[in-house]
Image 1: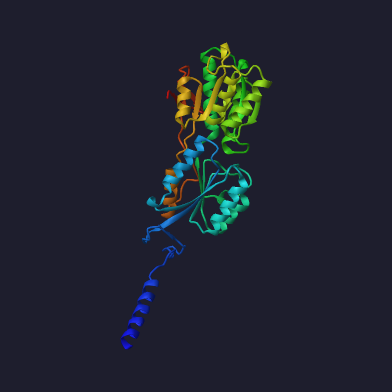
Image 2: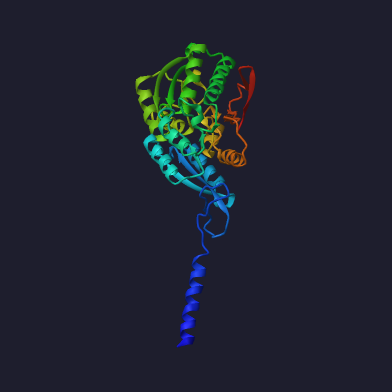
Length: 351
């Protein structure tokens, strides 16, 4: 009996000693609650909440993949990803969830620029840095976000518009003979605002006829729908300014469905398609074949850039408030070799 009793006591003590060893979510040296990798080691992962606009385009999907690849456990991160499905309400809900989960950083690609003051104030009150990627926000206090990384959308638009002006000069086409329609992006998004502004500036400067503007929501289906409407209402269209590749693909489908031909020979009835992004093989091939005449590049690979910013912040290094990405212009048409904007020359590349 005494031997059995001692055995039981020994087993109980052994159980208690084992159960007291695990400390999942132990506080990090900074005092914040950390997370460990699923392997059960002692490595503390940096928790990042990423609210993405959605999956409306090839550019967006590549951008999402870039972020996921950068913020993986192998790189020391626990990524909480949320697809906003192009709805600001969904993104605001996601940010509040990130705050409740006490993430280390919030990364936001905002669907539109306005309407972020309240939720970003909540993030600041929780002492969580917010990094904007791709699109901007319009807030009363710029300190509500730590920094932004992305493209100069107005510059992108200016490059394509200057390319069109150079094409007209090289081919002896009067500005008054340019009859252009704009398939805009999502209304209020930074890319739409910048690219549309650049077009309107060029229209006024060069005397082009801007026949119509409507949102294609950055999708191929909506781009085709809008272009179909344009073709019914405006018989003299000779240039289409599509604010991303997918809208351009949809526009081409609509043009060809009407028995029209896409290309750069607008003197003889072809319709020139201009676009932005240039991220997919389909887009590059469309330029090579002349179905898209010119593309303003928009680089989607922001993951490594944002990851570097977070690493620097973790080490106490303050990043630049705004970090612009270098981008080019693509065209298979050799009429224009370069464009000049504000005294800076940008070369036109053949894909």
